[in-house]
Length: 266
Image (tube, rainbow, N blue to C red; front, side, top):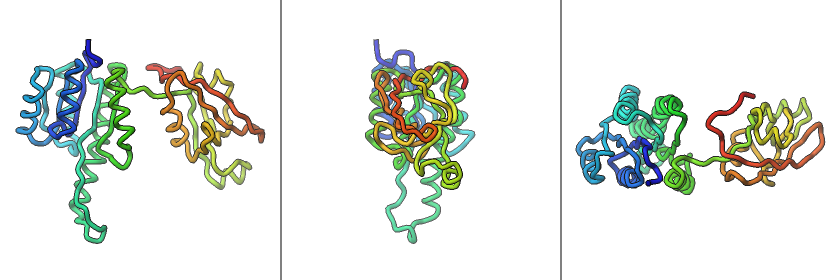
C-alpha cells in the first residue's frame, strides 16, 4: 500500500527536474500522474523515465486559458478525478537592474509564474470540489511560497495524501486606522466577523466582535496574517488568542483541528 494509492496528481513544469522527481515519487507511492509542460519531447522522456502506465502527459501552455482547461479535462477523462495539484511551472527571467530589464521578459515571467498558477487554480479547484477536495502546492511563485513551506507541503502530501492545516473556524476581518479611531479599537488587530457553527472557536467561547491582537504572543497585522499563524498549527495543538472584548483584555485558548471536508454555515 502506497501513501498516495488511487490519488490523481497534476504536475505543471512536469518535464523539468523538480517535476520529474515529484512525478516519480508520487507514482512510487501509488498515485496516477499527469505531467504538463510545453516541450512534448521532454515530456515523453519524463514519462518514459518514470516507466509506468500511471504516468501520462499533456503538452500545454500554462499561461493559456484554453490549454489549462484542456489539461484539467485530460486528467479527468483519463483518471476520473483530481486530488493533487502541484503548480510547479516557473521561470526566472533575466538578472538585471529594473531600468535595464526587458519588458517582454518581465511580462513572460508574470504570465508563467502568476497567471499560470491562477489559471490552474481557477480550473482545478472546481474539479477537486466535485470529488470532495484535494491538495494544492504552489511552487511557481517563489516569492510567495518559502522553500521550507513548499517542502512541508510535499512531505504532508506524501505522508498523509493531503495537506494538513490547522483550523478553528473563525472568519476574521481587517479594519482600517479610521475605523480604529472611531470605534476606539487598538491599532493592530482584526475583528472576529463570523464563526462556523460547532467549530473550536465557538467551543472556546469566542464572541463575534472580539478583537484579536495576538496569536501565541505574536502580534497580528491582518486577517490573512491571523489565519496564516493558525493554519501552521498541527491538529490537536492549542492556540492562544489575546483578544479585546468590550475594552477588556482576555486570553482565549482554542483547540486546533484539521479543517473538515464539509463545514456547517456561520
